[in-house]
Image (cartoon, rainbow, N blue to C red; front, side, top):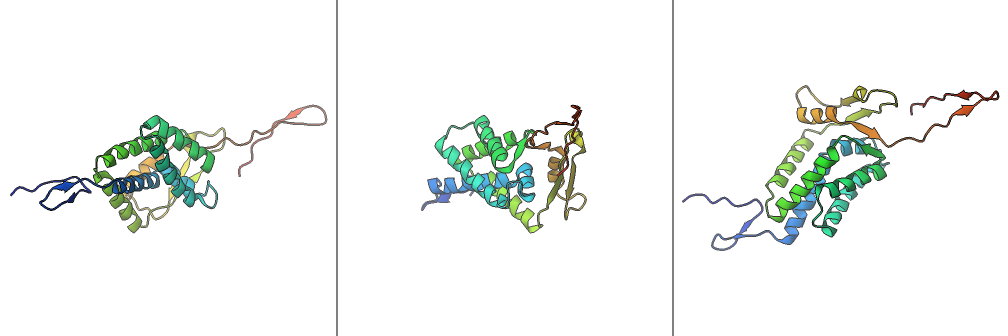
Length: 208
């Protein structure tokens, strides 16, 4: 007898009839997919590792995932642009980061796509993402360090480094990191100083 393939996550009732996943399972899988997508986002990982959202940056990422789930629950027809705008606003407001690398659009597109798949009862991509994340956790992951480029410097001079990363390991992640253009939110504007003789002094920005 030929084998019968069924979508990931379906169950068989008596008689071998496939049962659709419950709404609760669909929601749980979608919520998991959001969390995995955020953990795989280099820009957000960078912000969390460097505590740009404060000492509770990791907790903020967890809250971020729940906020996205609530957003889409309230607006089921949300498109990529709508989700992207939300991602950018949260990154700016909660992590003091202004992204200009296009990664927010990629993450938004992934989340919208995963929503459609999970609603169809197709959990194959979510399960694959989970396996990849678990494998990375077993390898110990890696910490990415970022050196902020001061105003006036070429953004290509941004320095990236990683701990516990052998040559050839996590090559795809390294390429994403190298390609990431990341700009922190604008700093407070430096006001010119005027001396006693009325001359304006040029004051350079100090590195933090």
